[in-house]
Image (spheres, one colour):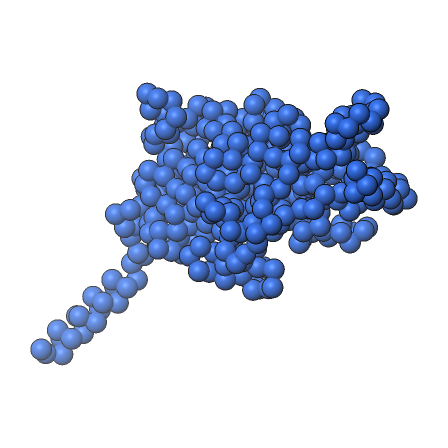
Length: 391
């Protein structure tokens, strides 16, 4: 090989290296792809033999009511029994629980490492990743309603994600050169307006449908962040996320601090986790508005006990006045199907981003109980407990 050939080869190599990397065969048309949510439930370790609940599953409202007020002929009033228990649910306190509470145990739980630290309270993921932050596993992991595969509330909350337009969460990716490996993509979360394309049975979502963005009523759900794709898995930066979750026609939202997505992507769908720190008050309001005491009893839930457990196990976002944590780590398991977005007018989108409210939507009951009232309630619970023992 002569000197001229060597120089030409070097020039050709330099020219090729200066050309930007082209999109690979997995790149979506125009570098954008959107997915609409079809399934969502709380990510919990729930083995068939419930070995993560060595103390057994928790009692619900009906079981607790029977223990509080046994049919022994004692005279009682409606106000002191049924109404009292309803008030305990609608105006919960952090006073000690009258009943023992079974927390979900480790060492395994699904989720993500939210703080980059493997602490003593952390779990290991089913895939073997350490440092998983999921205190929701402890709070609701031993409540039959939320356990897979057939917990009653889990079933209905998941089913309504597909059925109700209110719940139409959309994840849209931009600047995508590859669905396998891409160092940086843009991620937008919004709410859609349209039904999801389904099969003839009406229960299986199909890819290829269309969605319009809800900018009139859904501006508050708009979020934008950066992400990256490695090995076909999207991981995003953290963002405070408001997301809709309507069950049985009661439009409610939930709020997650420092939420991040981890989704395995394909051209026709995505599945994985949304993980972060769940705001307790908005989670609890969602539960109360969607699930009456009767419905909670399907799978042995007790609203007062759940609230006390969540506040006790909360591990993030301390209240600036009291220092008590107001958020609890957790994760949602989610499935998406691919959709074609009908893009909104850029001016309308910009206006929606400008007027949206991104703060926490609900801050608890209008009038929080005083410390003295909390103390009096705790004393009353202790007295009731003594009465239970004497019976």
